[in-house]
Image (cartoon, rainbow, N blue to C red):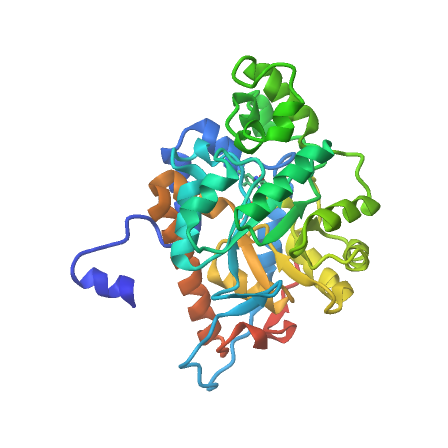
Length: 380
Ligand code: FNR
């Protein structure tokens, strides 16, 4: 009721509380470079559209008279108690959106008690972001480099800086065909703004003929050539297991057989995700892939979800389909672009409040009681 009560004194929110309107506002206010980078998807954007449609097609069937006065949104993810089933997805190169970049997003997450997943491709070194977060829960996303020493060094640095879980993004062994970026010949990395973790890394620097400062273009080329690796296969996961003693979560799983392989490989969790529709054009919608992955995981893996989450009822639906928690990407990037740390906090508070209300109004007091029975799927 806080927002309504503010209304009595004439104080209205600085940003829209409907995050799809916030997105429109960002598109108007921020330039075509930043908006193209964040909004951009693979191909014609059909996967991003399908992500939304798959969530919209599922409708909640609310239950009545179930005493929802006291509610507890907390969940446990990979052994960590979280206040709510929500985390900030790794989004690279946030300095495009705001000069305070990842540090502002991380501070917002810490202030709202939400974990922050820092991208390998951040514009701020991972140690600096950790410092900005204080005690906030921080997880590290790995783009699994070709160079073993760079990967080993990243894992070592992330551990030393207090990142507790490792999210390994598997859906980006190559960057996809993204027309909005291609048409502008715009790859943020080429402007050297998503390379802070690499340029500050001793193992990366050791692979350069000249210091980064002397030949930044050669350093960027070295980065582009090594930051992802299309030759990786499942047995390579053993290397990560040997070099990371905390939870490992594989991000970008869509096929149930890959969930089985993940469980057999001994990882702790998976994120059902199609990278927000940015990698495979024509891919299955993430919400359509979720139930089959949950079934295959059969309790052996923590299953998380992202791609298309825009509202509290989307969170409800993902949890009802079997996810333990969701990640959100673009909405907070837009919040950051519009109002820095305060904008990210606004986005988080909207999502958390709306989820809490949806839960209560649908007859639930905690996430654990949600099941597929709370949803129906409309035929197309
Ligand atoms: C991403 N995503 C991403 N994922 C990742 O593992 N590492 C990264 O560096 C990035 N960078 C990135 C940049 C931008 C601008 C976007 C929009 C997305 C994917 C991200 O973690 C997440 O999977 C999606 O954003 C989820 O979909 P929604 O919430 O944006 O629909």
